[in-house]
Image (cartoon, rainbow, N blue to C red; front, side):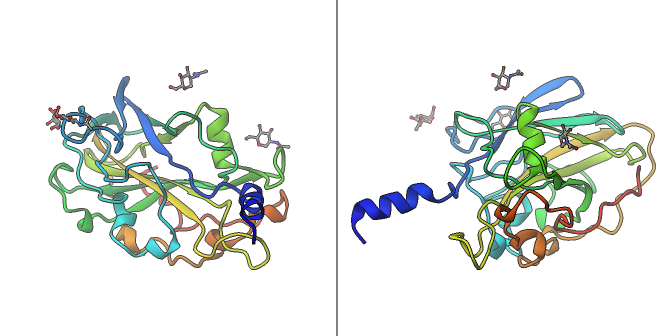
Length: 261
Ligand SMILES: *[C@@H]1O[C@H](CO)[C@@H](O)[C@H](O)[C@H]1NC(C)=O
Ligand SMILES: *[C@@H]1O[C@H](CO)[C@@H](O)[C@H](O)[C@H]1NC(C)=O
Ligand SMILES: *[C@@H]1O[C@H](CO)[C@@H](O)[C@H](O)[C@H]1NC(C)=O
Ligand SMILES: *[C@@H]1O[C@H](CO)[C@@H](O)[C@H](O)[C@H]1NC(C)=O
């Protein structure tokens, strides 16, 4: 194929890679910067409850990573050295952004939030010991606006990149890891389109929280993040370009835990 033909073909394909990161975290009236792996790792780190990663560029993980350590708290994830205080029942807000632009509209998909107890200080916890429950999920919203339909990511874009996560109101005080995640589906597997096998894109980011208040409910029934996804479930392999109606869409991962609501 002539070089110009390759170029034309490439320019017709959906942009496969986003480089998304959480740039801001708001909790308890305070704004924290997110973890910017593009920053200077020796001089950059500010006080942030965002777990550190080596994921310079903010690129995604894929279904083939679903059972690997990096799915827990991103590539090269390691503990944040502080936990952001938040009252049980209050909202934590995060803002996803790219290097110089908003989350790309084409990267439609679900937004998920998980919580695991650190059973002590999150600064010291072994992430392999974290047992996550899903506390919120939002997937396909309706069949408006885009050929692929309107998704959680589109609501986030409409809210200037912000997403709000409510801490369960009856959750017992203590330190917890919030595992917040976008799954972009624009190049999820399809046998008919020019899309890639192993194409769904996971963008996880962990944030350490210090939950305060009078709740008494402990997280129960959580799982190792390496078992949240198989990698080939329909919610990760559908072709969203077939039309705006994805009413049967099931957000991947376990059911939402409402035990502390
Ligand atoms: C990172 O910070 C160190 C210490 O301040 C400095 O010596 C180094 O030049 C910086 N590197 C980059 C790429 O900015
Ligand atoms: C977290 O680490 C950064 C970088 O080493 C440091 O500047 C900051 O003081 C630390 N914060 C806490 C709460 O230990
Ligand atoms: C589709 O969802 C968006 C975002 O939640 C909402 O603003 C809009 O009213 C919905 N449209 C329909 C037809 O339900
Ligand atoms: C949206 O977020 C960007 C990046 O922080 C900010 O510069 C801009 O003011 C925000 N816009 C609105 C309407 O809040």
